Length: 255
Image (spheres, rainbow, N blue to C red):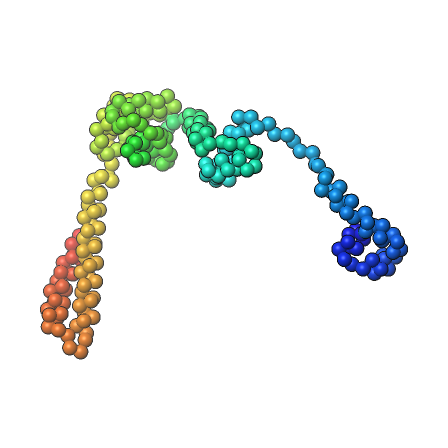
């Protein structure tokens, strides 16, 4: 410690006086410091060895994805920079998909009685989407070649092998889903969803709201002009007409 103080620039004479040691001994300690630092730099602590087999790679991919929330590109760059191992984004995706599929297959679908079933799209590719109406659990999210009744039946039969026994199917009026699900679950109650029924009404309400807001804005602008010292007769006439339009638009929207 005293030698380190001397190397740091403190006076050898002052250190020796305060510590009640000789200056000669202090210089000896000062000379020992570089060698001690060198020995610390070369000290290799024992560490467990890691075998970078496929099992380790899969665990690393899962940990970086789930624990670190890393993207596929980030995972790939981590393998390159830290482990000196290249792993493609496609390989990473396949590892994650394999684990996700194994996890999904381990879950029993018993107890799901009401399913909301529909198709969403990734580009032009249909993705069959099935959600438990009570828990909002997604019990299937899968790309499919088409949306035909045969395809819907095929995927439903697969879910039946995991315990799914639907009693109610809620969907739009798509021909594939409405025909395919009863094939897999004879006697099931097929109910139309309310979204497609309410959507036109919602669009109409939004249109009435925009119309009312525009008329109210126009009315406010005309009222501002009419408050001038010499309002134009045209502005006053327009203001009288727009009052009635605003009242009618608000009534229509409220209904």
